Image (cartoon, rainbow, N blue to C red):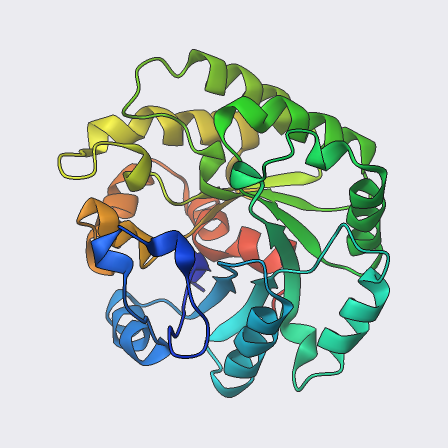
Length: 280
């Protein structure tokens, strides 16, 4: 079973996406109807759709869409982890049609103005509550934030964390030494998995090659192992790097070509299915 563990969908008519301003390829709506033929062409059996804005309403909209589309196996939404009403928010989402398709929560840590956001008592408590509720916490963080992520993961052993985009290594910025050091430290915590996704937008957008991506992918597999690594398209954000769905699938097949059959099955779907508790 092939699972795309990370993609986005949005409708500008119902939900503005201010983060796309100035990013011409993304300044439009992206629907499931546009994604579906690309999934079919690539042989992708199911997907996990991930939040884009800090909005409980968006989470509800994604759950409503997933209730209608059998290939949408799970939603990583947004809930306010700084609120004392997290349990009420969870109850509200669970009460929706197919509310059990909420499999995780994410906050845009990489653009969070408070550098100590993860250290807040209320956030740590909310992260623990997510674990008790059977939900993951997806981490989207810049490389310099990985050490703080490790501290939070260590303090919240009952919660499953998923590192998006391999921790966003600076593939177009020079040395990967600091990223590799902090990723290796993070990988020592067994309650963390990682996504090989979003790498093309960390490289040269218009001239990336497999050689640019391979060091990061090899490091991920060496530190986390295939059983804690999952594949994601990061569509449509990948379009910023002139990478449509088919091109990223083809590149990923090359990058994972050395895996055993068991390892390949984990990366292409098994890890996502286990970590997110997906039901086909």
